[in-house]
Image 1 (cartoon, helix red, strand yellow):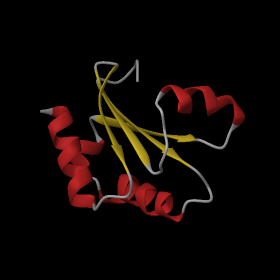
Image 2: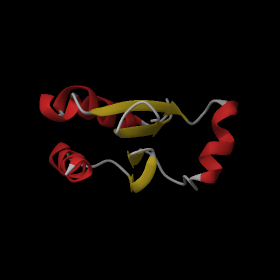
Image 3: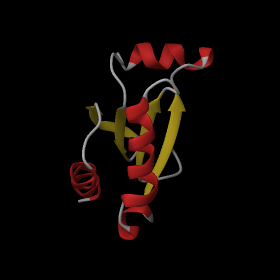
Image 4: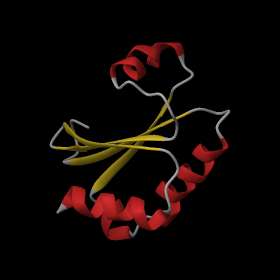
Length: 95
């Protein structure tokens, strides 16, 4: 997040089938003009070293997305969403 003006982090877990769909949306359905300017990362919520961060963000449901502009959290989104909605959030992030 420090190295990129715009970033999204996908908090996920291997047991959650919706996270597979979210991963696919972020990896292959985001238009190129957005994927060039928005860094997209993933964080495995099952890893012990990530539990404090998950508590800090009060993650109760997955998938969970955090959107950052200039290193600051500007929005969160919980649950599986359609690709058009995710793309809309990304467009607003970079606007």
